[in-house]
Each structure stands twice: as C-alpha cells, then as structure tokens.
Length: 492
Image (cartoon, rainbow, N blue to C red; front, side, top):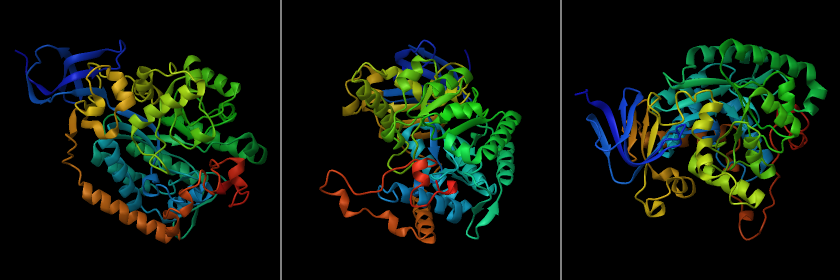
C-alpha cells in the first residue's frame, strides 16, 4: 500500500481548467509537498490530512495580473476629482511613503487577496502618476516581506518614474536619476525574483509614452527604452506597462519593448497597428474591466482573442473605486463586452474563468506551473463554499462561479500545498493588527502631505444625476498634462 498523501481535498465539484477543461463532480485532489499528486473520483486514497465538507468547489488559485501597491491606503481620495487623485498619489508615494507605509499596505492587500482567493498577483510598486519607489530598495524589500508573510505569490513591478529626471523622493526631496532607479531595480531583481519558490517575483515597468511625448523627448525615451530592454534581456523578468491606448502599443513595439515576456495593462481604443504589434511580438494584454480606463475607453477583448492575442484579467486595485475581488471583475468583463456587442453569447463563462487562471498564467510565463489543476503542477487551489443560497442549486458550476460567486464565498486557500485559510480562518496572520497599522499609516501620510481634506465625500453625490467633479484624465495623457499641474510631463 502506498504512503498516505500529505493533504486530500474532497470536493463536490472540481473545475480543473486543464487542457480538456474537465469539470469533475464528486472528486478529490491529493497533494504531496507543494505539488498536485493525483486527481480522481471514487474512494479517495489515504492522507495525513483531509478537508471534506459538503458543497466545496475547487478551482485553480485566481491570478490578478495588474494591481498597485500603495493604492490600498489611498482608496477613494479626491472623491471623484481625477486630477486630485493623481496629485494625492504623487505626493504620498514620492514624499511621505516610508518602508513602513509599503509594509502596512502590502499586508492589507495580501489579506484581502487571500480572503478573495487570489493566490498570485502582479503589484506595481506605486503608480497613480507613474511614481515608482525605486529610489532605494527599502520600499521593495518591505513589499516582499509582506508577501512572504502572507504565503501568497506576488510579482512586484519596479521601474523608473515618468520623465524628466532627476525625480525627487522623500520628505527632503532628494534628486534621483534614471540610472539610480535602474540600479535599484537590478538589485531588487537579484534578491527577490523567485516567485515559484519564495513566492516573491519581480517585473520591470516603464511609463507608457505616446507620439506627443516622442516629439518633445524622443531621444531620451529611446535611450530609456534601450536600457530597460537590456536589463530585461539580462534578467529574463516579465515586462509590464500601465495605461496603453490609441497607438501607444505600436510605439512600444517601435521602441523594442515588446516580446512574449511583455504584458500590457488597460490597452483601450487600440489601433490596427497596435493589434498587429501584439500579434507580431506575442505580447499579452491585461484587461481591467472595472477600472476607470475601461469607462473612458474600451479594451477590445473578444476581438483580441479572435486575433490570437493572449488576454488576461487584472483588478487595477485596490483603488480608487475597486478591490481585489476577481469574481466581481469576471462578471464585469462579461457584461461589459456583451453590452458593447448587444450579444449575450460574447465572452462565455468558461473563457472568462480562463482569463484569470490559465491565460493569466500564460501571460506571466507561468502556465507550466500554475493556472490549472493538473498532476505535477503547483498546489495553488481555492475552495468555494457552494452551499449558499446564491450558489444553489448545485449545477452548472461555471455559471455559478462567474455570475454569482464573490470573494466572500472563498472558504479555503492552499498555496504551495500549504493551507493558508480554512473556513475563512487565517491562523498565521493577525487581522486586527494589520487593519490597525494600515489605518494609522494612511492617517499619517495624508496628514504629512496636506491631503487630509481629500478623504471626505461631498454633498454633490446626493440627488443629482451627475456630480460636478473634475473629469478623469489618465496619467501620462495630453489631457492630464494640461490640467491643474501644468504642462510638465512629470505632473501627469
């Protein structure tokens, strides 16, 4: 008789997302170490530990391919004023955010991800107005510390901020050059890029530039792109960008930034040249259906899929108006594109689940290890509690998961074969301490930057069909540059 397995999950339904896309009723998954050892039906094999409760639905751990560190502590600052939102992010991230800020925020974000079944995420170390805290390694070190404490996987995206240089960082506003930021990125990659073993990955990011930027700063942008490409080639890490639209992907291709190891965020109102660049290079698209960018423009997901482009889902969270609930984002994606085409057959439920499991793993270069439940793959598994009124009756699992489930239905989370949460209890994390530290850090940075008044909701949110707020203008756009901060490209 064979030795008992380390852990056995006995489930009402297993949604494998394997090459055959099997949905298995009344089945079990056996784990040994950090790997899936067996999947079957009938009498389960012996195991040292068994999880067996009625109605459990097993899925691969969900993957969020685009989110932001820092945003969890600024949430809805500005109350709908887009210019103010970007200014808050710039001031807090560049001036007031200490390593304690990044530690507290990532602990909060990881807690939310864990309770929502997100086992792998890409997290930009900043953002908003393209402020990335790579002036020194301590912010990235703090972020990775919180990742390891949580037990989840996070790919931290680091890179230089938006030009011109030098950028100013810290309360003393010390100048930091492009070369200095790139040196810190290389250091963080060397020490933390091990997403499969230590669960801390590192990616590179460069702000999105447009033809308007090229006309004014073309030589500098080409030089920065060359340096970025050289560092990526040397290290083999993922490359990502935040906020592509209207020809900027074709420009990124011209700058030599695209390859199968590139995953591009938002990507709305694409041109044919953009789509051609994606097909030629094998770069992937990260669709953020709940983001404000998807209100002001549209990512053509069904068309990209039909063109053979890999597309995955991101939350763009945790702010200003959305969180890490990938179930919400799956449902949003379906309704978003079905409304566009006025066709309920667009973006079927199974394909939608693929966007934050196997397709996301493919975009991140991890499809051989995570993203589906298969023998030999990493044991990253979530169990939903299917015995809830809104998930009943127990038929049509894909419909239940993508239309009706939410983060609150995640019962159990396993990463690397370790049970991190069971029946929504997380023994290794102190939730009260995490929430208290996050609130304290948020209070501190808003006070330090003079933005405490931006955390209230004004009376115009009542009664009227519209509120008199500043229009949203994406960071780096020409509209943003001509806003309250003037024409300085740094103030996007």
